[in-house]
Image 1 (tube, rainbow, N blue to C red):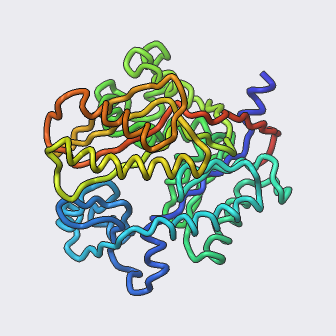
Image 2 (cartoon, rainbow, N blue to C red):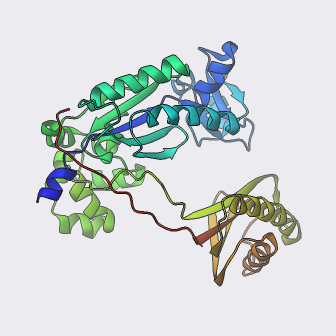
Length: 362
């Protein structure tokens, strides 16, 4: 009981950069400021990786095709992504985080969880820490960030989206249950479009509706996720901020300018992909036992084929041999627009993070 009370009295901040890739491009190129831009490829085969807020007003968002984005917003400006630059900025932002805590769990280049229950500034207010971090990011780097503050990662993540862009929201411990009950189900982190529709069909539109369902009912309709939903709507999410995230797999992939129909041409591409993967795993001293071949067809359907070896591998030649075996495992059902290879079942050690939890006032 005492342990659960400590867990429920954490101070967690979720920091989420505002339209990060697009904002970096607008910061570096003043001519793009105030204009609708999309980071990614235009044309029939391009995909939007990120969109500025000016572009989002027209329905331009990540993962849609460049063709549709341009159709929605004729004045849209496409900018080629510069991931090295984004990583450079992300590293600078993370250094600011480290001035407050070492318990940082990055989710991507543009967002992270911070556990500031015990922090380097000795500041008892997570809300004030979040304000200070956001102020420093703006003054020292030139970008805006939003933040969510609460007792666990789930609520902090949901809260960070409330006052975007350039805002923050705190959900105090005594506000958690009412906050979750009033929350539209589509705003629950982890509840996607398909699950939302399924919940609507079951009469679940808000957190209050969700809370009225039994754990057995939710498990029956949503499997393991149902148990998760049952807990989080009651403010229970015990996952700690993991300061060292251990990768479960390492991969490389390539989307082709023209669809491939011949396995011979596919093998040529796989050689290049395997070489890229070899460089990545050897850079970090990683090896794995499971090789997975990813195939995306011209109709955008996705297929994966895997094989687990009795020993760890990291060499291009061995990775390629297994990838070719998987390629010829069965006949292609259509022309191919993307191939990828990933290495899983890695030899990395799982490290445990010890988190000190204390009672606090927000």
